[in-house]
Image (cartoon, rainbow, N blue to C red; front, top):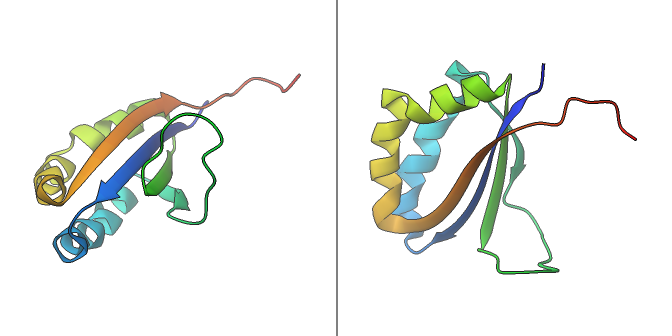
Length: 100
């Protein structure tokens, strides 16, 4: 079964205001089996536009990734994040086919 992923790109405009959002995410993602694959880190934009922070979170499957996003806990935490950042977030199903 293919894993599910959140791919987020974020510009934080208030680091102190953003910290409670980060702190609350750990227990939420753990509840849904999520784990960080990318959390910040050095990057190079080679095409298109970028934001200052990139995050990839892996979930057991696509349905679980969607359920985590729609959970009451995460929906409440979005309200903590939004005044302090601008984000692009997609939820995508992983590739679970033999490689060419």
